[in-house]
Length: 391
Image (cartoon, rainbow, N blue to C red; front, side):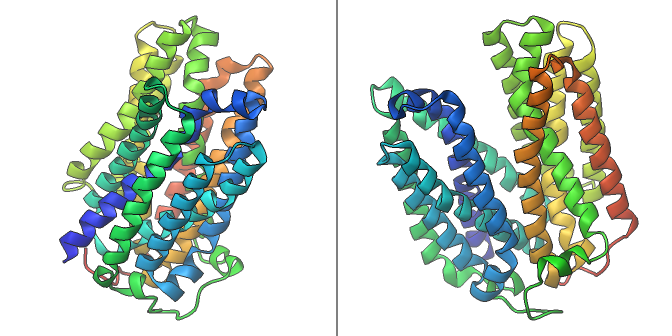
């Protein structure tokens, strides 16, 4: 039964990735018909991210009360409804309204699933599951592209993904009897009640963990958003070629997470994180070197380095904070991650707009330094409590 549940969780991670890449892929064909400037995509993205942050912070309370299985099923259903809402929206304000359940659904399911896997499965599964997120994120633009190339409307792409999410919701509802354990049923273990944000922040090393996620996701999202522009503005690479080179970053993350699952047989979570940070440093150095072939190789290395960090830090959370508090801590980790994603790329955009796009490698290196310092501070505290369940 545990393997059957694992298959359901793998499908759920693909489902997590599917909606994340839709807006970027569909927006060039959306904004004209909506009668809004191209920049308005940022408004929708911010609303989605805001909802995700709110629901991440509430994940401990929701999961303790309803269980990880129910939270996951309801969250995916909310996402499916929001995607269907997008597909029937003909006005920008309607998209903004549907963006609210879009974000609320994403945050809860992300935190609940990550905590459940961290408690009940080995580190390799965390890496492979996040690789499945990359598969979903890659499928989203493919679906939009197929619909548009076939002469269809962008709404058809959203409707297709909504149907897939509805099918997954049905699978999750049927799988509810399979979910079990502290993270599934809401048993409190060491503490029977959800923790407030103030209580979570008072836990030793919690802020270090939050800073690690903030810096990591700031680095990942900045690299994904601005690498192509950096190559075009500062290296003179043609826009089409630069876009292809930027794709190497995503290839690195997806392939790296598949590889990381095998490396976890030999390396611990902390070793995986340190290895990833070292590879990122090499990648940033290569991007900074003014040689033609170095920058593409550097972007691939940055992606490979990013691959093990997010899954490994999450998987180690119950070891650092105990199984009873891991859901609460993972919730604030997710919230910190989304804050980093929201803030750091636009901050670099301001610098790039003022003619400082050449600082791209320096910016990435600064975020890497913050991440390393925060993670090492987290490790110095050691595991506060032993894992309360078997891997």
